[in-house]
Image (cartoon, rainbow, N blue to C red):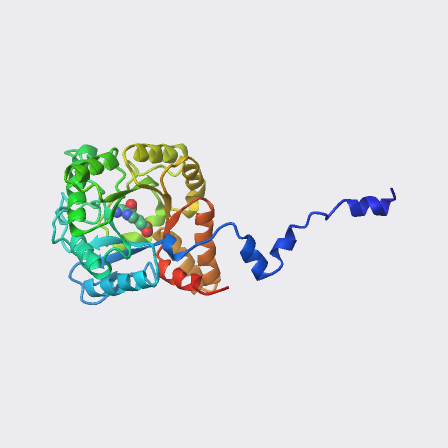
Amino acid sequence: MTDAQAGSAQFPQVRPRRLRSTPAMRRLVAETQVSPAQLVLPLFVLEGAREPTPIAAMPGQVQHTRDSLRATVAQAAATGLGGVMLFGVPLRRDAEGSGATDPDGVLNTALRDVVAEVGDALVVQADLCLDEFTDHGHCGVLDGAGRVDNDATLDRYRTMALAQAEAGAHLLGLSGMMDGQVGAVRQALDAAGRDDVAVLAYAAKYASAFYGPFREAVASTLVGNRRSYQLDPANRRDGVREARLDIAEGADVVMVKPASGYLDVLAAVAAVSEVPVWAYQVSGEYSMVEAAAANGWIERRPAIEESVLGIRRAGADAVLTYWALELAGWLREVR
Ligand code: PBG
């Protein structure tokens, strides 16, 4: 064998680039797809609002009025989204978070409005947590020493779950990170004859700086942090453990949150879960891209598409994202 033959028998005989040659070829071999049905749009509704109020830290997002909320969910249904996740911003807050369990509280009212608008054309979901409703801003009620009281909070969650079910929610998003919350809410729903209402467990919810812009979105009053109940960003095993526990307690869906910084946790949970696994692309993930794009530092649309694709590729069956409507619109275009 001559040197020339030896050389040609070497590289590059394997040419992965063949499958990247044209848009049609790339589309045909793409392993991961994003479809509108896999997207859930989080929405904020502000009690008593007369005009939608822009959220400065989340350009393009607003605190809705009852009317603008209805219009947006109608659009979400027409666009084929999988669902909407509602957050209420009340005018009054107290230590117990009474507004959360008041049938006429902002979130329960919004749920009734939304269900009246779209029926079951969308999966109507509600944040089940006390932080928007407590004056101290924590996700649960406090004990005498000012600590978040796990089991007293479970009682509040049970009542809140029944109020949300009564208001018409299809899926309850348990985001408070109290131990035993999934089992407690499941039991309360079943005992009340509401075994039809599903539970989404924010199973692996990390104590993240990337929730920063959300604080403005819900006018959070929190002083301090949530590190005594949300997961330590250092820990992957704990995320998988929480998901397993929530599945054992009856979660219909488990979620990892935030998404981008936690794709390893997402993949690990997806590898062991027997129920659907979702991910929440949180406010900070949204605002970073929007800010960079506004400065001309990043190309907005491909950055958004890539960010959600990456979350799907890591193992998310569905993604909560503030870009759900806009992204779904793009996905309808033939590329
Ligand atoms: C708690 C809740 C939070 C988010 C969703 N549900 C805030 C927190 O835990 O501090 C954050 C969502 C986001 O940042 O987009 N009710």
